[in-house]
Image (tube, rainbow, N blue to C red; front, side, top):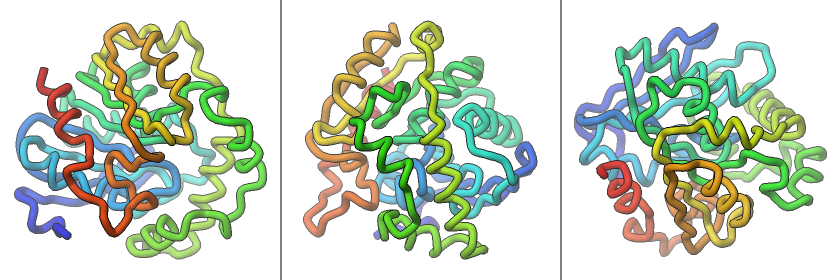
Length: 264
């Protein structure tokens, strides 16, 4: 496994962002690519396997959002809109005027909000298993969220959090904030999604939590978009930690396809 210090130009720090001490990591050189993790996750649990691949050709900026990983909580409910504003503020602090964005799962929904709320900083977006409507997941998902309990959180995600967080009690806070945000999730209206002008690559697994039909619907709403359906489950195409198997191979990840899209 590649360690951060083995990747050229590695740098990590905290930045004062809208009342947060927001943690970020930077790798490599080149055009900025911002990575936005999924719910209940850290930089490493979502992107550890693909960061070294992207960093060969790009400046990779990976963030940890409110209450996740090493970033503190601001004693306020989570929202995708606020997460989008936080990322925009971080980039301003880092003197980055424009970037490409890759968001996975909840991070994909945050990426949608970045494209909607901050088009001036948005070049291209990659939406990995992103949700924009409640109908985009099966009904059982909402029942599960209504009854979410820390005991049911995937063990690899809990382990990943505890490996980096300074306060072990933050695990419960992160879990509860993520669960509440999903229970209260509201559809992003079609007319708002249609305002997205950024070129978009929508990626979905054929055995994903998000339905293929939902990905197709988003593809039709975002005028300048492409759609890719990849064999596998939720995040398997980037090596997300809960999908890893002993036989997982780097060659199975969608990095070359994403790079081809970003480099057009």
